[in-house]
Image 1 (tube, rainbow, N blue to C red):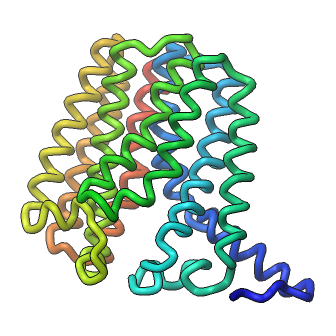
Image 2 (image 1 turned 90 degrees about the vertical axis):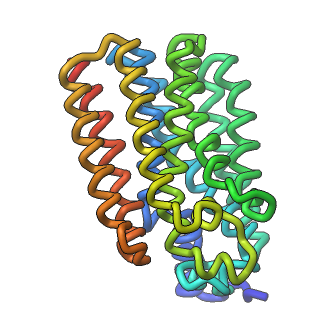
Length: 293
């Protein structure tokens, strides 16, 4: 049991552990959640989304990603000490008691929900689904080899919410973008799972990296092609032009680079490929931003 800190230094150590529990020292997850939300807002707002909606979604992404990391570490607190990459996380290392994590998760969700209340009723209703997805995702790896797809649904839920907040409706184009986001999560989170595959097999945790086995690179490549095709279809339906096409071309090049990185399935290279997806998301958004200027 973690003792209650009795000194200022003790409280600072606990605050630092909470900061790391929320993964603010590793912002990659914020970007992977933020880019699809911005894609959706720019398409829904035809290049000029409302300032309030954009601000609420940006802050909401930061808060809900932090909440997702907290509940993930709470759910995995018995697994993480046995995995090389995660054994130093605050809960796994005993720096924080589990009750602090649960309290922090609830507070983050409440603040995020308070911000959503500034938006329309449809977005508020959709936020309950988003909260359920964020809270339940960490437990999926116990029951299915497709937790990466569930993560994609959780991360991608910002897309229909963005269209609802900006326009009051979710068109077919919005749902296509949602599916593209789910496919993207399958791509980058499989790369992430490739880092832990040996440990996950040993402790009985399921993932797409285990499911795909020796065909992982080929399946990731097929998913990359599907995602690019879905994004191209969205762009055509939205009437996007040359700048968006250029952003897509840069994204395709980044996907090719990721394939090169994971060619030997080395852990560090697979992790770099996962991180590189931030730039894919940025390239697609930059294309949209320039196309609507």
